[in-house]
Length: 421
Ligand code: EPZ
Image (cartoon, rainbow, N blue to C red; front, top):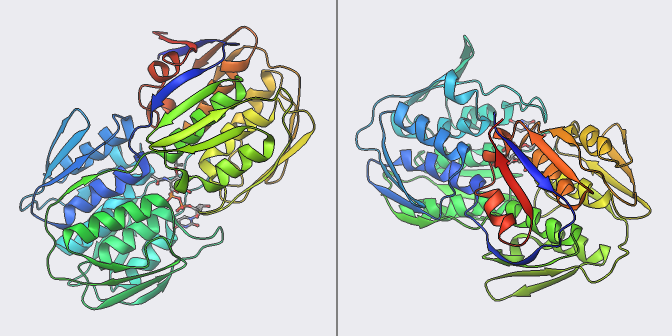
């Protein structure tokens, strides 16, 4: 297994281009199943999770070509409706083929996605929503078996114990596009990735209103068509590189980043004392002060602070004098990065769903182990600023969500490279 090596202590300076959003591309690729016609998806990042979704579409006998950043999906009269365990178990987001399969074919067999290190990852809200649309759902031998002659519109409340659900909103919204009558999703997710999915569905001919709000209305139609669509930029990738610039005392232009997707992240960085400017076509970030201010952060559904940037902020706050607090309200156990950051010299204590961070003067490079996608990103950030060398193993986690990470960081002055282990 490969590892990433980082020689810390270099300021990042320059500009880099933000890739398309993984978490928009995944449900949009699933949405291509809603029509027989060809769809062309542009600005798709080359990531392991994208390749997994392509494998799932191919397992459903859908033709898929991936050239450069463009994916051509040719469903035709595809008939297979089983998303196998060997693929679904490697990527939870595979669950978002369930709604489209049910709406298009009237049946679906999707392996239960299982949990991961950040939490148990239940799917009760997905199943609740599809049952409200008239689906008959059973769980047998680790598979979701769903049947529905024709789905029927309904009002469904999709809020769970931790607020709205991104992919449950995606699944129900996609299924509702071909249901008979009107569906209203209450406590829907407002994430930009859901808005991008909704805009893709509207281009296909779906009738959707309320995107970006907690109430989404979908009027079912008989048929959808294949379309061309460009994926929005990845706000989590952008946030990760903003922190890299702030941590290393650098000055970076993030081309393609959209400030309107990142209000709370920009606000928090400004609160800490980092300069963030919204520029045409991107975001400019510069650290001008040696001493920054500690922060209090609570992760919440959009437009609240994104849980997918929580680990990266923990690395950032570990070097800010004073006491910072991070409350993780979406995945209360999402702290796999803390032990490894502490091994690098951070001083972070866990109390239930909160991390209490006492800023230290420096971090030391060390051999560390990645555990999940965003925890791995936090270790990269820590390595960029640590004294000495950091070696990160199990970096397949990183390859799931960051396109050409070493290349982008090296391009702005980082000493980072990949070695065959
Ligand atoms: C999406 O996952 C993202 N993944 C996650 O990003 C992100 O962390 C998460 O949303 C929250 O923003 C993709 O979009 C592919 P949820 P999703 O359903 O949809 C609970 C990354 O790093 N819940 O919004 O699976 C759940 O346990 C990944 O790119 C239920 O209780 O997350 C969590 O506490 C990691 N029942 C909360 O809701 C359900 O049926 C939010 O989860 C579904 C979810």
